[in-house]
Length: 223
Ligand code: CA
Image (cartoon, rainbow, N blue to C red; front, side, top):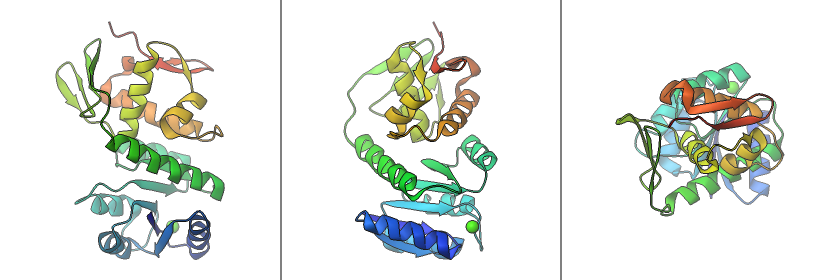
């Protein structure tokens, strides 16, 4: 598996590359937006770790260009939680976000979780179109419609919706969702769940996901 790290801070890029190499990945580094996009086209990586603030053009633009011809999993690095919220809201198409500073152990866990999800998604899903209220969820085609209108969810948002629907109204804690959707086992990243839930409510309607105070989330009562 080949990973491209696009990050202009040498020490961070070097530390990420060293840790990923020790986990058995082939790693390349680019240090600005244009050379990162060029490297992504040339090297065809299996995953890109992409810093938001870059010289040339930023990670936002780099993500858009990298994904123009080919869907590449992206783990975006941001400096603030508010930046992560904004990016999730914009539906940029990154698969996950990490706010600096982070541990290398957490980075590796997230990279492996993304690669696992990509692998799972490429296997044929159990058939069945699920209907809940006026929402239609096609797991094989990974498409969602609400009131007969197509709603575009990111891969992560789609998996989160599938997970909540499968729970059939039961409340899932943020830790359960992190484990089942993102594949994390250490409970880190609760804010990630909240950011994605906010984005999904904007796209599908506020009633689609119910917040259960101090516990977690459940699918809304849509019938
Ligand atoms: Ca930077």
